[in-house]
Length: 227
Image (cartoon, rainbow, N blue to C red; front, top):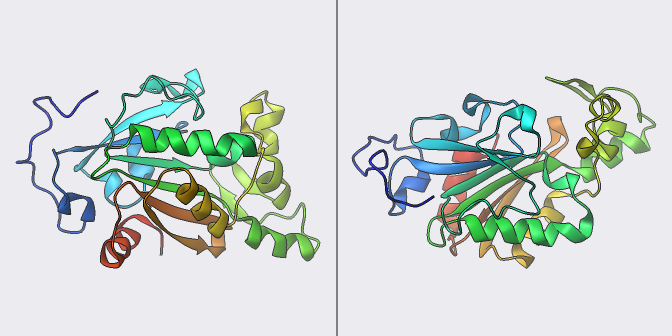
């Protein structure tokens, strides 16, 4: 994959709300959707769902019909520096803790060094701890497309999916927002920003390949992270 191609021209009109287009580059931009599952582009956050972005689907499950079949620890099928962004939701907790550095390093490798960024979300164990301390281990915390989600599902992986034989849905590590930001910083991202989404017990972070200033961080948070 490269920046060439008739479909990628600077002339495509973009909305003013996408800060990614403040940095030079072709249009549409490419976002690698890591762990895409059955979700479509319309389920991606912020500008990713719009016409300014081309979704490249990446998943371990052939049944998800990804554009690229692979794992987060081995993204060798993706060309170095070929992606403008990565979006990955509830994926990074499915690898062992010692593999997190390799996953983040792969994110860094495939992103363009001057405009690449990653939006990463996963369960927030800090928020989960409050529910567990209250003794609500098996009580639903929220409803998802897969059904009710309990603290046990967040800790160890969606039990119904694992019971169906999708053992890759098991969780092998966990994060708070701060530890997620630390993982991005330790493994190649120049700067990062994050939030806690308390109502969904989620940690969200953006890692930047370039040294984003405070104004850029704010603009990307507003555009790409939930409010």
